[in-house]
Image (cartoon, rainbow, N blue to C red; front, side, top):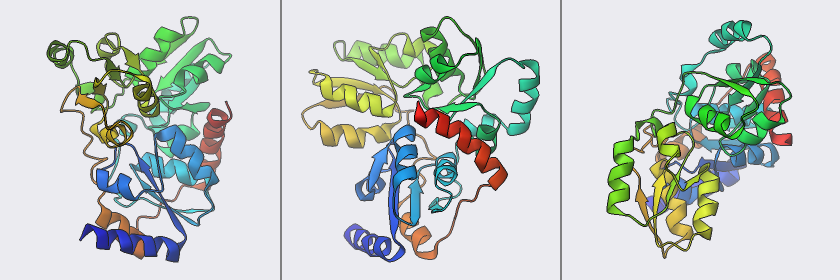
Amino acid sequence: MKENLKAKLIELKKEKNAVILAHNYQLDEIQEVADYIGDSLALSKIAMSVKEDVIVFCGVKFMAETAKILSPDKKVILPVIEAGCPMADMVTAEELRNVKKDYPEAAVVCYVNSSAEVKAESDICCTSSNAINVVDSIKSDQILFVPDQNLGSYVAEQIKDKEVILWQGFCIVHNRVTSQNLLHIKEKYQFAPVLVHPECRPEIVEQADFIGSTSEIIREVKKLKDKKIIIGTEKGILYTLKKQNPDKDFILLSEKLTCMNMKKTTLKDVISSLENETNIIEVDESVRKKAYDALKKMILL
């Protein structure tokens, strides 16, 4: 059955001149058929350079919006329109405009996990893999970091000469992991290194052996000689880790590390949305231009 679906998808891609982008947190069946798999930064760059007319973005809404912002001439499809990001919903453009009035000298650094409208109100975007470099590159001594307080806190620890004002948002998945979860796993696997995403709580990050984005964790695992490795990010990453490192065992830091929004997209959804060209993402041009500027600054760093 699945092979028939894969064959149909290959035909549709040729017919529609489409490319499939998938985030590392997607279901295995989606990563198996994707033309490109990556984290937010990698997929943003790919979205700018693909030659196909249609981009099917297997992720959540802000990611598909980012692809449309960067490639306005492409048709961008989000297979499941309900696939959102709770953290992105924790800040609105209106709320950000109001807070900016309280900090007129602050540069606004916006995590890509945000809406197009919020990006348009920001000076520059960042991802978890380049957030430190982005903040460090800004001349202003005061940074308003939205919307992830955990990533912002991690950045502030690395860059002491700037005041980082944190928005009170967070990833509901990474934020679920507690010190108790970490203590339990470390007791069970005493010699296994702990690799975590900076969206985790500060008390988790402080105790990790390595902190990095999805792509950085994947690269670090390749370097490690350890045969057992504890992974502190969304479980979808295990698809790539196991594929690239069949000789290593991966232990998820917590079973709570499952993003239901990232798991909404199925192979059938991809085929249906591409076949019928439904769930096409549009971004208002006035918003797109401003958001594009913030994203482009990040990409050019």
